[in-house]
Length: 212
Image 1 (cartoon, rainbow, N blue to C red):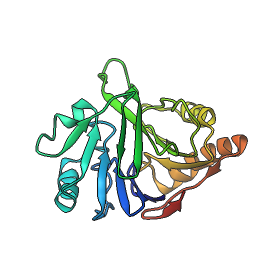
Image 2: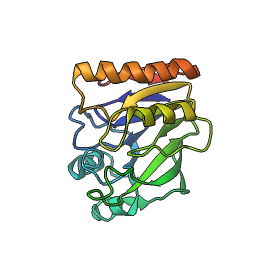
Image 3: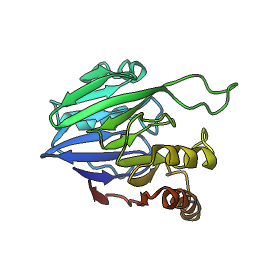
């Protein structure tokens, strides 16, 4: 598989000429739509992960694709082909085996942040993307899409999550809110955690690819 990284939490995976798109949100300004998309995973309804216009544009180029997401996402796009998923769901589609875990978005603050649905996705038993949560995958993972900064997350929490998952390769996500200086600071903390557990920390720039 070939992984291509875009801004914030968005990336694609290509396998045998087919492409899976993950979290093409409104904060991903550099996304370029492939013409071989078979599926899109949207982990939750927040705009930095879910952009109805992007999803419509992907569908316009790929009319046979399916969008997978929790019911709160699916209910917002009735005009598009969708399938609702939750923790424990499993889907196989054209070379991609998708397992969904978690179910709940991490809380920013109990007084101001209601409970939102969120699904993490394990792709081909290889790549894990937790969306906006630190839900453990419950199985060995080769490549971790690691949210390194968020209103709902402390560095100590993301570091503990990383060291619990113990992936072979870690690439940072959910980081468009950081400046260049901030990226360096957060990269240093998570790289130290990777070194401790024997993981490789890889900062992927826009459109940079990783062969898995």
